[in-house]
Length: 356
Image 1: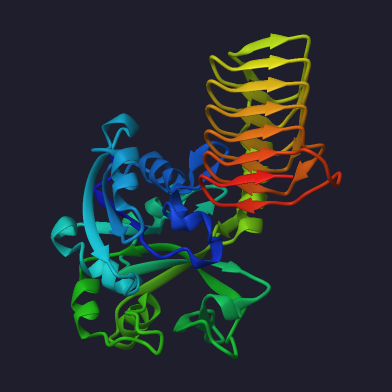
Image 2: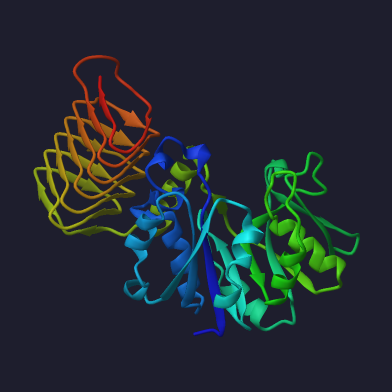
Protein backbone atom coordinates (compact mmCIF):
# COMPACT_ATOMS: atom_id res chain seq x y z
CA UNK A 1 0.00 0.00 0.00
CA UNK A 2 1.38 3.41 -1.05
CA UNK A 3 1.17 6.39 1.29
CA UNK A 4 -1.14 8.35 -1.00
CA UNK A 5 -4.86 8.99 -1.19
CA UNK A 6 -7.18 8.88 -4.16
CA UNK A 7 -10.11 11.03 -5.25
CA UNK A 8 -12.63 9.96 -7.88
CA UNK A 9 -14.79 12.74 -9.29
CA UNK A 10 -18.31 11.42 -9.86
CA UNK A 11 -20.14 14.65 -10.71
CA UNK A 12 -21.21 16.33 -13.92
CA UNK A 13 -24.57 16.33 -15.66
CA UNK A 14 -23.55 14.02 -18.52
CA UNK A 15 -25.42 16.13 -21.07
CA UNK A 16 -23.71 14.44 -24.02
CA UNK A 17 -25.13 11.10 -22.92
CA UNK A 18 -28.73 12.15 -22.48
CA UNK A 19 -31.27 10.63 -22.24
CA UNK A 20 -29.38 7.85 -20.39
CA UNK A 21 -28.12 10.28 -17.77
CA UNK A 22 -31.63 11.42 -16.85
CA UNK A 23 -31.83 8.32 -14.68
CA UNK A 24 -28.28 7.78 -13.45
CA UNK A 25 -24.77 9.26 -13.45
CA UNK A 26 -22.71 8.79 -16.59
CA UNK A 27 -19.92 7.15 -14.57
CA UNK A 28 -22.19 4.18 -13.76
CA UNK A 29 -22.83 3.31 -17.41
CA UNK A 30 -21.36 -0.19 -17.80
CA UNK A 31 -18.44 -1.04 -20.04
CA UNK A 32 -17.88 -4.81 -20.31
CA UNK A 33 -20.52 -5.10 -17.55
CA UNK A 34 -18.61 -2.90 -15.12
CA UNK A 35 -19.38 0.78 -14.34
CA UNK A 36 -16.94 3.21 -15.91
CA UNK A 37 -15.88 4.64 -12.53
CA UNK A 38 -15.14 1.17 -11.19
CA UNK A 39 -12.21 1.02 -13.60
CA UNK A 40 -10.85 4.16 -11.92
CA UNK A 41 -11.30 2.65 -8.45
CA UNK A 42 -9.66 -0.62 -9.44
CA UNK A 43 -6.85 1.31 -11.09
CA UNK A 44 -6.16 3.20 -7.85
CA UNK A 45 -6.27 -0.01 -5.81
CA UNK A 46 -3.93 -1.74 -8.27
CA UNK A 47 -1.48 1.15 -7.79
CA UNK A 48 -1.57 0.63 -4.02
CA UNK A 49 -4.01 3.46 -3.19
CA UNK A 50 -6.86 2.16 -1.06
CA UNK A 51 -8.04 5.23 0.85
CA UNK A 52 -10.37 6.86 -1.67
CA UNK A 53 -12.89 9.72 -1.63
CA UNK A 54 -15.70 9.78 -4.18
CA UNK A 55 -17.00 13.27 -4.90
CA UNK A 56 -20.73 13.08 -5.64
CA UNK A 57 -22.69 15.35 -7.93
CA UNK A 58 -26.40 16.04 -8.30
CA UNK A 59 -27.22 13.11 -10.57
CA UNK A 60 -28.52 10.24 -8.44
CA UNK A 61 -25.70 10.19 -5.85
CA UNK A 62 -27.57 7.47 -3.96
CA UNK A 63 -26.94 5.06 -6.86
CA UNK A 64 -23.20 5.65 -6.47
CA UNK A 65 -23.36 4.93 -2.73
CA UNK A 66 -25.46 1.85 -3.42
CA UNK A 67 -22.89 0.44 -5.82
CA UNK A 68 -19.68 1.21 -3.92
CA UNK A 69 -20.82 1.13 -0.30
CA UNK A 70 -17.93 1.55 2.13
CA UNK A 71 -15.55 0.12 -0.47
CA UNK A 72 -14.80 -3.07 1.45
CA UNK A 73 -16.06 -5.37 -1.31
CA UNK A 74 -13.48 -3.78 -3.60
CA UNK A 75 -10.66 -3.81 -1.07
CA UNK A 76 -10.80 -0.06 -0.45
CA UNK A 77 -11.98 2.45 2.16
CA UNK A 78 -14.39 4.92 0.58
CA UNK A 79 -15.31 8.33 1.92
CA UNK A 80 -18.09 10.31 0.23
CA UNK A 81 -17.89 14.06 -0.37
CA UNK A 82 -20.93 15.91 -1.74
CA UNK A 83 -20.28 18.63 -4.32
CA UNK A 84 -23.78 19.23 -5.63
CA UNK A 85 -23.75 21.76 -8.46
CA UNK A 86 -20.90 21.15 -10.95
CA UNK A 87 -18.62 24.08 -10.14
CA UNK A 88 -15.50 22.61 -11.72
CA UNK A 89 -12.75 20.12 -11.03
CA UNK A 90 -10.77 22.49 -8.82
CA UNK A 91 -13.85 23.18 -6.70
CA UNK A 92 -14.41 19.44 -6.24
CA UNK A 93 -10.79 18.93 -5.22
CA UNK A 94 -11.02 21.80 -2.74
CA UNK A 95 -13.87 20.03 -0.94
CA UNK A 96 -11.50 17.14 -0.15
CA UNK A 97 -9.01 19.14 1.92
CA UNK A 98 -9.92 17.45 5.22
CA UNK A 99 -9.88 14.01 3.61
CA UNK A 100 -6.43 14.54 2.10
CA UNK A 101 -4.74 16.01 5.18
CA UNK A 102 -0.98 16.15 4.64
CA UNK A 103 -0.77 13.32 2.10
CA UNK A 104 0.06 13.32 -1.57
CA UNK A 105 -2.96 12.33 -3.63
CA UNK A 106 -4.22 11.55 -7.11
CA UNK A 107 -7.45 12.83 -8.65
CA UNK A 108 -9.10 10.55 -11.20
CA UNK A 109 -12.06 11.70 -13.29
CA UNK A 110 -14.65 8.95 -12.99
CA UNK A 111 -15.47 8.85 -16.70
CA UNK A 112 -11.86 8.30 -17.82
CA UNK A 113 -10.27 4.95 -18.70
CA UNK A 114 -6.57 4.35 -19.40
CA UNK A 115 -5.42 1.21 -21.16
CA UNK A 116 -2.40 0.61 -18.94
CA UNK A 117 -3.57 2.25 -15.72
CA UNK A 118 -1.57 4.62 -13.54
CA UNK A 119 0.67 2.35 -11.47
CA UNK A 120 3.92 3.48 -13.08
CA UNK A 121 2.92 7.15 -12.81
CA UNK A 122 2.10 6.76 -9.11
CA UNK A 123 5.61 5.42 -8.53
CA UNK A 124 7.06 8.28 -10.55
CA UNK A 125 5.20 10.86 -8.46
CA UNK A 126 6.08 9.25 -5.13
CA UNK A 127 9.77 9.02 -6.01
CA UNK A 128 10.18 12.58 -7.30
CA UNK A 129 9.98 16.00 -5.71
CA UNK A 130 6.97 17.22 -7.68
CA UNK A 131 4.36 19.57 -6.26
CA UNK A 132 2.05 18.32 -9.02
CA UNK A 133 2.26 16.05 -12.04
CA UNK A 134 -0.09 15.80 -15.01
CA UNK A 135 -0.63 13.11 -17.61
CA UNK A 136 -0.78 14.10 -21.26
CA UNK A 137 -1.88 12.48 -24.49
CA UNK A 138 -1.57 13.73 -28.06
CA UNK A 139 -5.02 14.19 -29.60
CA UNK A 140 -6.40 15.15 -33.01
CA UNK A 141 -8.74 17.90 -31.74
CA UNK A 142 -7.18 19.63 -28.72
CA UNK A 143 -9.82 22.38 -28.73
CA UNK A 144 -12.09 20.07 -26.73
CA UNK A 145 -9.61 19.58 -23.85
CA UNK A 146 -7.32 21.28 -21.43
CA UNK A 147 -4.10 21.77 -23.42
CA UNK A 148 -0.47 22.39 -22.46
CA UNK A 149 2.29 24.51 -23.95
CA UNK A 150 6.00 23.64 -23.78
CA UNK A 151 9.05 25.83 -24.20
CA UNK A 152 11.80 24.92 -26.67
CA UNK A 153 13.42 22.68 -24.05
CA UNK A 154 10.25 20.67 -23.50
CA UNK A 155 9.43 22.31 -20.16
CA UNK A 156 5.79 22.82 -19.24
CA UNK A 157 5.06 26.56 -19.28
CA UNK A 158 1.30 27.01 -19.76
CA UNK A 159 -2.02 25.22 -19.39
CA UNK A 160 -5.25 26.45 -20.96
CA UNK A 161 -8.81 25.06 -20.94
CA UNK A 162 -10.48 24.38 -24.32
CA UNK A 163 -8.47 26.98 -26.28
CA UNK A 164 -9.70 28.32 -29.61
CA UNK A 165 -6.08 28.26 -30.82
CA UNK A 166 -4.36 25.33 -29.05
CA UNK A 167 -0.68 25.85 -28.22
CA UNK A 168 -0.03 22.12 -28.82
CA UNK A 169 -1.83 18.84 -29.52
CA UNK A 170 -1.16 17.52 -26.01
CA UNK A 171 -4.30 17.27 -23.92
CA UNK A 172 -4.60 16.83 -20.19
CA UNK A 173 -5.71 13.32 -19.34
CA UNK A 174 -8.26 13.24 -16.51
CA UNK A 175 -5.74 12.15 -13.87
CA UNK A 176 -3.90 14.67 -11.67
CA UNK A 177 -1.15 13.97 -9.12
CA UNK A 178 -1.16 16.62 -6.42
CA UNK A 179 0.15 17.67 -3.01
CA UNK A 180 -1.73 19.68 -0.34
CA UNK A 181 -0.19 22.92 -1.63
CA UNK A 182 -2.95 22.86 -4.27
CA UNK A 183 -5.55 23.78 -1.65
CA UNK A 184 -3.93 27.17 -1.04
CA UNK A 185 -3.97 27.76 -4.78
CA UNK A 186 -7.64 26.76 -5.15
CA UNK A 187 -8.62 29.30 -2.48
CA UNK A 188 -7.22 32.06 -4.73
CA UNK A 189 -9.09 30.96 -7.88
CA UNK A 190 -11.90 32.86 -9.53
CA UNK A 191 -14.53 31.24 -11.77
CA UNK A 192 -13.65 30.98 -15.46
CA UNK A 193 -15.82 32.19 -18.33
CA UNK A 194 -17.67 28.87 -17.95
CA UNK A 195 -18.52 29.72 -14.34
CA UNK A 196 -16.29 26.91 -13.06
CA UNK A 197 -13.16 26.70 -10.96
CA UNK A 198 -10.77 25.21 -13.49
CA UNK A 199 -8.02 22.73 -12.65
CA UNK A 200 -6.02 24.21 -15.54
CA UNK A 201 -6.10 27.63 -13.83
CA UNK A 202 -4.93 26.07 -10.55
CA UNK A 203 -2.07 24.26 -12.25
CA UNK A 204 -1.13 27.41 -14.16
CA UNK A 205 -0.97 29.32 -10.89
CA UNK A 206 1.30 26.61 -9.46
CA UNK A 207 3.66 27.17 -12.40
CA UNK A 208 3.56 30.95 -12.03
CA UNK A 209 4.35 30.74 -8.32
CA UNK A 210 7.41 28.60 -9.00
CA UNK A 211 6.18 25.20 -7.95
CA UNK A 212 7.56 22.08 -9.59
CA UNK A 213 4.93 20.72 -12.01
CA UNK A 214 5.97 17.59 -13.90
CA UNK A 215 4.31 15.70 -16.70
CA UNK A 216 4.32 12.31 -18.34
CA UNK A 217 2.94 11.29 -21.72
CA UNK A 218 0.54 8.37 -21.41
CA UNK A 219 1.40 5.11 -23.13
CA UNK A 220 -1.48 3.24 -24.73
CA UNK A 221 -5.01 4.47 -25.31
CA UNK A 222 -7.01 6.84 -23.14
CA UNK A 223 -10.70 7.72 -23.39
CA UNK A 224 -12.99 10.26 -21.79
CA UNK A 225 -16.22 8.26 -22.08
CA UNK A 226 -18.49 11.26 -22.43
CA UNK A 227 -20.19 10.22 -25.67
CA UNK A 228 -22.00 7.12 -26.88
CA UNK A 229 -19.52 6.32 -29.65
CA UNK A 230 -16.59 6.54 -27.22
CA UNK A 231 -18.34 4.20 -24.79
CA UNK A 232 -18.95 1.63 -27.52
CA UNK A 233 -15.37 1.93 -28.73
CA UNK A 234 -13.92 1.42 -25.23
CA UNK A 235 -16.31 -1.46 -24.64
CA UNK A 236 -14.97 -3.16 -27.77
CA UNK A 237 -11.34 -2.47 -26.80
CA UNK A 238 -11.72 -3.85 -23.27
CA UNK A 239 -13.58 -6.92 -24.46
CA UNK A 240 -10.89 -7.53 -27.07
CA UNK A 241 -7.97 -7.07 -24.66
CA UNK A 242 -9.27 -8.53 -21.40
CA UNK A 243 -12.08 -10.98 -22.07
CA UNK A 244 -11.45 -14.60 -21.14
CA UNK A 245 -13.47 -17.65 -22.08
CA UNK A 246 -15.57 -18.63 -19.07
CA UNK A 247 -18.88 -20.45 -19.36
CA UNK A 248 -20.93 -20.79 -16.19
CA UNK A 249 -24.40 -20.72 -17.73
CA UNK A 250 -26.34 -23.49 -19.49
CA UNK A 251 -25.66 -23.97 -23.21
CA UNK A 252 -28.27 -25.95 -25.20
CA UNK A 253 -27.87 -26.68 -28.95
CA UNK A 254 -25.77 -23.54 -29.33
CA UNK A 255 -22.37 -22.46 -30.63
CA UNK A 256 -20.13 -20.43 -28.36
CA UNK A 257 -17.16 -19.18 -30.37
CA UNK A 258 -14.01 -17.53 -29.03
CA UNK A 259 -13.49 -15.53 -25.85
CA UNK A 260 -16.95 -15.45 -24.34
CA UNK A 261 -17.96 -15.03 -20.70
CA UNK A 262 -21.40 -16.30 -19.73
CA UNK A 263 -22.33 -15.84 -16.08
CA UNK A 264 -24.29 -18.27 -13.93
CA UNK A 265 -28.04 -18.90 -14.20
CA UNK A 266 -27.97 -17.76 -17.83
CA UNK A 267 -29.50 -20.05 -20.45
CA UNK A 268 -28.53 -20.02 -24.14
CA UNK A 269 -30.74 -22.06 -26.49
CA UNK A 270 -30.37 -22.58 -30.27
CA UNK A 271 -28.12 -19.55 -30.57
CA UNK A 272 -24.65 -18.46 -31.66
CA UNK A 273 -22.50 -16.39 -29.33
CA UNK A 274 -19.33 -14.99 -30.89
CA UNK A 275 -16.61 -13.38 -28.82
CA UNK A 276 -15.26 -11.22 -27.50
CA UNK A 277 -18.56 -10.92 -25.65
CA UNK A 278 -19.85 -10.96 -22.09
CA UNK A 279 -23.32 -12.03 -20.95
CA UNK A 280 -24.35 -11.43 -17.34
CA UNK A 281 -26.34 -13.44 -14.82
CA UNK A 282 -29.93 -14.70 -15.13
CA UNK A 283 -30.21 -14.02 -18.87
CA UNK A 284 -32.26 -15.93 -21.43
CA UNK A 285 -31.00 -16.09 -25.02
CA UNK A 286 -32.95 -18.12 -27.60
CA UNK A 287 -32.76 -18.40 -31.40
CA UNK A 288 -30.43 -15.43 -31.53
CA UNK A 289 -27.00 -14.26 -32.60
CA UNK A 290 -24.92 -12.29 -30.14
CA UNK A 291 -22.01 -10.93 -32.08
CA UNK A 292 -18.54 -9.70 -31.30
CA UNK A 293 -17.89 -6.71 -29.03
CA UNK A 294 -21.19 -6.93 -27.19
CA UNK A 295 -21.80 -6.58 -23.46
CA UNK A 296 -25.08 -7.86 -22.05
CA UNK A 297 -25.99 -7.13 -18.43
CA UNK A 298 -27.97 -9.21 -15.94
CA UNK A 299 -31.60 -10.35 -16.29
CA UNK A 300 -31.70 -9.73 -20.05
CA UNK A 301 -33.99 -11.62 -22.44
CA UNK A 302 -33.12 -11.82 -26.15
CA UNK A 303 -35.25 -13.96 -28.45
CA UNK A 304 -35.20 -14.30 -32.26
CA UNK A 305 -32.81 -11.39 -32.58
CA UNK A 306 -29.29 -10.38 -33.57
CA UNK A 307 -27.09 -8.01 -31.56
CA UNK A 308 -23.57 -6.82 -32.43
CA UNK A 309 -21.14 -4.17 -31.17
CA UNK A 310 -23.55 -2.95 -28.51
CA UNK A 311 -24.07 -2.50 -24.79
CA UNK A 312 -27.30 -3.94 -23.42
CA UNK A 313 -27.90 -2.99 -19.79
CA UNK A 314 -29.70 -4.90 -17.04
CA UNK A 315 -33.30 -6.00 -17.46
CA UNK A 316 -33.63 -5.34 -21.20
CA UNK A 317 -36.02 -7.39 -23.36
CA UNK A 318 -35.37 -7.73 -27.10
CA UNK A 319 -37.64 -9.87 -29.25
CA UNK A 320 -37.86 -10.47 -33.01
CA UNK A 321 -35.39 -7.79 -34.04
CA UNK A 322 -33.35 -8.94 -37.03
CA UNK A 323 -30.32 -6.74 -36.37
CA UNK A 324 -29.21 -4.33 -33.65
CA UNK A 325 -25.76 -2.81 -33.94
CA UNK A 326 -23.74 0.11 -32.54
CA UNK A 327 -26.36 0.60 -29.83
CA UNK A 328 -26.41 1.60 -26.18
CA UNK A 329 -29.63 0.40 -24.56
CA UNK A 330 -30.54 1.48 -21.03
CA UNK A 331 -31.87 -0.59 -18.15
CA UNK A 332 -35.28 -2.25 -18.42
CA UNK A 333 -35.90 -1.05 -22.00
CA UNK A 334 -38.07 -3.23 -24.24
CA UNK A 335 -37.54 -3.57 -27.99
CA UNK A 336 -40.29 -5.70 -29.49
CA UNK A 337 -40.51 -5.93 -33.26
CA UNK A 338 -43.73 -6.61 -35.08
CA UNK A 339 -42.84 -5.56 -38.59
CA UNK A 340 -40.47 -3.15 -40.27
CA UNK A 341 -36.94 -2.68 -41.52
CA UNK A 342 -34.03 -5.07 -41.14
CA UNK A 343 -31.55 -2.91 -39.21
CA UNK A 344 -31.92 -0.27 -36.53
CA UNK A 345 -29.68 1.94 -34.37
CA UNK A 346 -30.65 2.86 -30.80
CA UNK A 347 -29.65 5.20 -28.00
CA UNK A 348 -32.47 4.55 -25.53
CA UNK A 349 -32.94 5.75 -21.99
CA UNK A 350 -33.76 3.56 -18.99
CA UNK A 351 -37.31 2.16 -18.67
CA UNK A 352 -38.10 2.90 -22.32
CA UNK A 353 -40.25 0.72 -24.54
CA UNK A 354 -39.89 0.56 -28.33
CA UNK A 355 -42.27 -1.52 -30.48
CA UNK A 356 -41.24 -1.73 -34.11
